[in-house]
Length: 78
Image (tube, rainbow, N blue to C red):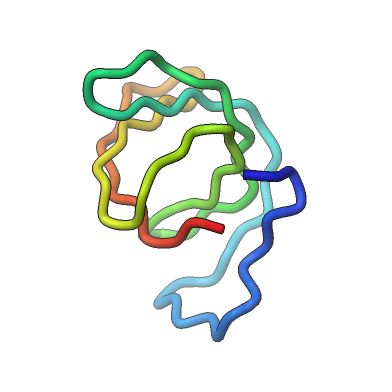
């Protein structure tokens, strides 16, 4: 994904986005961690810009420094 990836569709989130900027690590099953940049957080998820080529519906693990890894599902990819 590019650093300028932006969601341009209708925002259907149940919670407001909170803009953030920070480094994270993302991993797909059977692959090594890849660095990414956390761009926003909601109560239900987040947006991360990374070179990881994950598909919608794919399960990933996200590690935010200082926290344990969290499982997630890719919901949008641009």
